[in-house]
Amino acid sequence: MSLEIKNINKTFTRTDLRGVLCAIEDLSLRIEAGEFVSIIGASGCGKSTLLRMIAGLDFPTKGEVLFNREPVRGTSPNRGLVFQDHTLFPWMTIRGNIVFALKSSKRYDLYSDTIDTLIETVGLTAFSNSYPHQLSGGMRQRAALIRSLAVRPDVLLLDEPLGSLDSFTRMTLQDEIIRLWQARSNTMIMITHDVDEAVYLSNRIVVMSPRPGRIVEIVDVPMHYPRNRATPDFVNLRTHLLKRLDFASEVEQEYYL
Amino acid sequence: MKNRVVHALPLIVSVLILLQYLFVPNFRKFTPLDQNAPTDLFAWVMAFFILVFFLWNILVSFWSAAEKKLRLRAPIYTAALVLLLLYDWATLKSGILPQPFVPWPDAILNAIIRDREILVSAVTHSLRLLFTGYSIGVAAGIITGVTAGWSKSIRYWVQSVVKVLSSIPPVTWLPIILVLASSLFGGAVFLIALAVWCPVTSTTMNGVLSVPKSTFEAAKTFGVTSIGMIFKVALPASSPFIFQGLTQGMSVACTALLIAELMGVEAGLGWYINQQRGWAEFAGMYGAIVIICVTFLVVNAVLNIIRRRVLHWKEGEV
Image 1 (cartoon, rainbow over the protein chains, first blue to last red):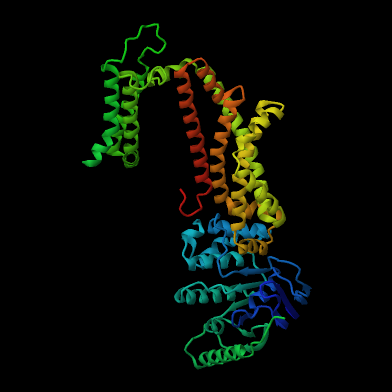
Image 2 (tube, rainbow over the protein chains, first blue to last red):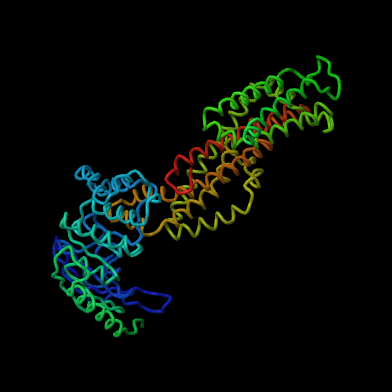
């Protein structure tokens, strides 16, 4: 797996602003196989747009996203995406959702025997025949996570997957995400606006500035897993990132023509 | 204790009906040649009701499901039976309601049995007409609804047409249809289909529009094809809305069916009612109305069962 983002620009024509909104400007990034990369930044910095372009749901105005040296032209089961809202199909059971994902991506024959184990690893065995509305918010997000993982994507894109959860559920799920990632050694790219979460989970953290979206800094996180939120290294890095984000908001510019 | 009394109410009222039917004198004398002379039929029907409610009251003591159902239904059954009692008294026993225009239950039952063969073929014909029109309307409505939900330019046209058509009662077109249609059956089918098409189209369209964009995008990341998007995502996701349209559509379809049969089609229940009215056969006319009520109640109950089956995944259903 290789993922390379080469000098991409993304502009949106916005009638309400009577002009063009530059969401991302000249952004380049290389992501290695098996990495856990977090992208942080204030809202409106284009991080979601960036993730959608990697997923193949949006396309850069200029530049290209290369996945396995091929430009991304659309979605692929090799690039899974987990949304902030669970997006489970409400008319299917949890198991049904996973089966649907596997069948749609034509990987049912390959991985159908792993469904039950996967459901078990996130503690949903008792709920595998329940419908999404019968589950709690945390359970739904777990289910959405394993639904995307079930098709074994090379890259899993996480768009603020824990954003709508309370902080306790959030922390439990962060540990589960690490466990799942370490078990499968796929690449993870996560968007978050929670600095703590980024430091807790990632190998590398990309700090973005808003309007237009640019990379301000890329920080390596050499700490071992599982990480301790109270160690000096952790706290220092968090403080550093928060400073960078403040700085990022200082360079805010006019963004429409 | 209080529940016991409620459970017994339908039984008590049924017994009262039977007693007043058998022992209260009728408002006039009947000769055996009189077509509407009271028979034992109504008494036997009430005896059957008494038996059913009696057994149900016994069943209650050792089957909790039967108890729940009886406790839930007993008040409404009692009210219906009280109405039946009043009706029988106001017609056969006192003649307060104008005679012979309001026949009593026994006469209606006998008229139904007398004309059973014609009635069975009328019900068959009506149902065939209803379902042919209804299924064509539903199929067309779902197709236009989904495409209108999908594409903005199709939506522009479909929405305008639906807006105009839904403010005009579909039966307005009946005279034109009856003149132009090559067969009365075909014309009525068209009318019913048109009546059903409007609500089904607009609810299906709203259903598709209400599906969150992220649901489609999630499906897209799994490689769902565009045909799969329609059949495996858009349709099931909007099925609660579609069923709303199916229910609305059924009620307008029933209206359109009856009017078409009353005004032109030469078969079916509406036509039968007209025939009976023409011959001043009031018992037969009331009998047909009873049959119509029962038929439509059953049709809607079946639709409701299907809806519950299909939407069992949805919160608040079942």
